[in-house]
Image 1 (cartoon, rainbow, N blue to C red):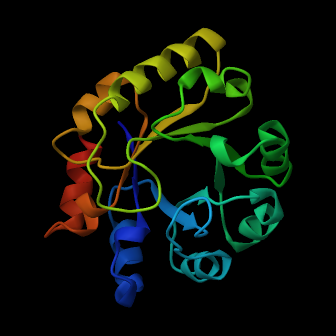
Image 2: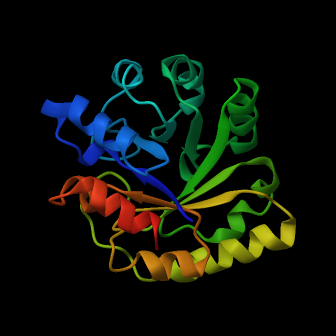
Length: 215
């Protein structure tokens, strides 16, 4: 069964306790938390203090996705705030191996996100050192975008790289994931589905999560 990670960015920020309760009581596995700095991506979302407050009610794994420049400056603070896994962007880290080693030394699972335009082969020299690859199936920075079709081939290429290298990294797919395309994404090799508007924009989020989980 896939790992389901509802994206809190799509929740109603006036009722975050309700969003936490939905995820806690559902068959979802992770909380997905998108941190945006207004530099690497156009938008600004939230930071360490927000995650720390959410951690008081969120009872599941905190999957923190940093869409920021210079993530090494803040990694320890995200750990202290409650991150269980920390994902940085390939495109934002000129010294990616150093970033990964820092995250792991802090006791978190390390992930790397890759943008739609970046080829999978760029992960070859790091794939054995990480627990997660986040395949961005939309351009990062905004929720509610449409899934980019060529992401399916990227997932397949990544799965081949993982198998060839002997890595145990999970494939996470983030952006435009819906009940309509989830099966194709999973069949391509994905392990983790990030769903934002598909979950929190549905009339019954718990039931939607259950449907994703049973794909």
